[in-house]
Structure formats: structure tokens, C-alpha cells
Image (tube, rainbow, N blue to C red):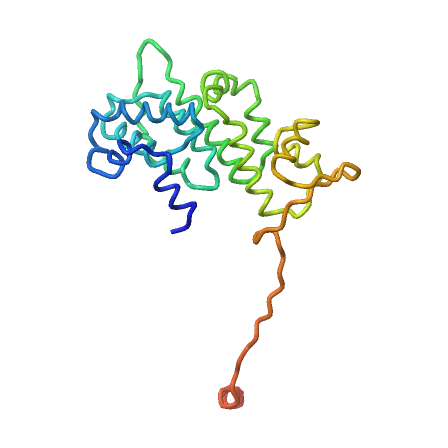
Length: 244
């Protein structure tokens, strides 16, 4: 198990109480849903993230429709966006019941309206269409998502930029600041400061950013050497002659 996978399964910030709930049969006890929901809002305020604990909430909603809370589901999906390319968002979607109940007959349910947009945002991130992601995210259509949800998620936009950085690091050795700025939704001094925090080298004269070498952005030629013994070669030649 890689370090990244290990931290995904058991985040170092997960409290012992939550570990016991997630790892044991108590994860299916509906009376514990409040504890898990409180933990979700702790993640939102503290920039921590625990996918398995959040999936446990959705599983409880799936088994107990009376527990359904659309705001909690939307927050889980928003946090899952920041985990791309991990499959957290799709795992969360898979646990949503097709028969979404109404949380409160007196108030409109925001989930049916926002779910298609959240799914599109996720697809754009997966496809590395970052300028399109920011354009949709900043659009008037998603004003309610920004004003009611992502504004509460501490560091949400920077977490999305970390998704961008992971992709850029595996793809580029050099990239111009105009393209990088579009990917990060940053410009001017904000972009320069962000590049400096990353430790990347910016040539102000050319506007080119150098990405430090890593195993993913280095092209290395490989030589494949066939080791065929003489008896094997003789068999190949004999078979070719007999087949002629």
C-alpha cells in the first residue's frame, strides 16, 4: 500500500472515536450519524479530509431516508472535488439514492439543482479542463453553490489549485505564465506569489515557468534487448521454412 493510499484509508488526523465508528459495525448505527456529520463540518473548518468517514454518512442516509440532509451531501461532494484524481466523488455519487426524498416540505431541496453542476465540475477536473472548470464555478448559475457552500469550506479554491498543480507537475517541464494562470485562475502578483510558494522558477523576461524534474515529467528512452539463443533461432528458421 502506497503512502497516499494509506493516508486515504486512514488519515493521520482521524480521531480515535471516528476510527472506531468507521472501522467497526457501529458505522451502520443510525444513532451515530450526528457524530459523523459533526466530523464532516470539522473537516470543512480545518482543511482536513476523510473520505471513508464521509462515505459512512451517505451509507447511513441510503439505509435510513429519514436522516437525509441535502446540505451534508452537497458538502461531502464539494470536499470530494478536491481529491481528484482519487475516485472519491464517484464513490459518493454511487451511494446516493435515486429516490431523493425531500428534506423539508417547506423549503426547496438544493441537491437536485446543484448535483448536475457538481458532476460537471468533477468531469472538467478529471479531464484537466481547468479554465472551463473555473468559468463554470465563477458563473452566475453557481452563485448559490459559492454563497452557501464553498464559502464555508476553508481553503476550497486553493485545494482545487492543488489538483491543478498535481496535473501540471506530471505533464510539463516548462509552461508559460499565461497558460498556468488560466489553469490556476490567478494572475499578476497573486500568480507570481503562488509560483514562488511552489518553489518553481519563473523567468520574468520570457514568462516561462520551469517545473522541477520528477519521474512523471521526464522523458527517458528505454532499450529493449532481445536475448535469443542460437538453438531458439534455429527453431524459428525451421518453422518459417516448413510453413512456406
